[in-house]
Length: 336
Ligand SMILES: [Zn+2]
Image (cartoon, rainbow, N blue to C red):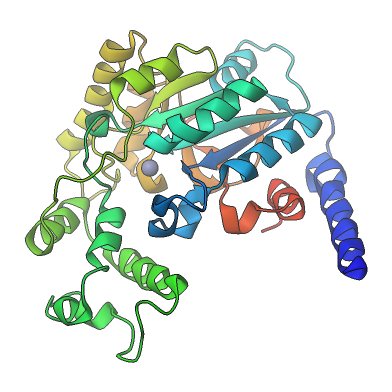
């Protein structure tokens, strides 16, 4: 026990050093910006936790631990403020960090917002305008729900059958196995257009009125007016902006989401987030017509002098990779 504690302490200090003295310190005078990408914030005891993909969740306790570490080593800044300062040539801290939440999940309001307020930490939340206040689900969550059905029923769904685990798989043995199956099916579906995926799901599992997973306008408004949270756009429907999406739809996703968020929140969004990180030529051309900057899912740390404001790099943060101080330091160092 003592040995393990000592080992952990050593690993932790090595990892802390990675952040403080690692590769990103080679040019200490060059300002850098870490943008952290969170999705859902849920306690493990919440039934929504086990139904979600592991890469999407962080517990409230883990978020608390992250904020304490970040405050120790970074200037935590509102993303648009850092971009404004850089744009106008003002001095920037050597190491800044901006926190972002994607999608507009209700749990962000329930669990993340009180923590942000308590720590007085700013963040940006990217909302999907047409999903706000609805009980609509993202298609990966619909797939996960579909897979809860009895095996016999799933085997009768043509496309799905080859993606199911072997016959001896026991659905109640391990939730990790169920998540593995869901991840495999979701990964295979991603090769199709959003339209085809939704049509397929509509035919095999019509959307049922479910408990609301996304924030409503009042909750979003409360966050937006708190002074801690800026709201950015994440399109109208979370369609991936790929070449298989018709050009007029791409334009509408950018323009309409900006318009609706601006009308409802009395402040037009300035920042944009590409769903699933997908970026096509048209999106790259048109996003700057509507927004001042955009974040991707491309992993990395932004260097002020080499910045592409419309392809900002982020570090994905989730429970299994960041639930200890040592793991979180390694992620901040961008070692894995
Ligand atoms: Zn998203």
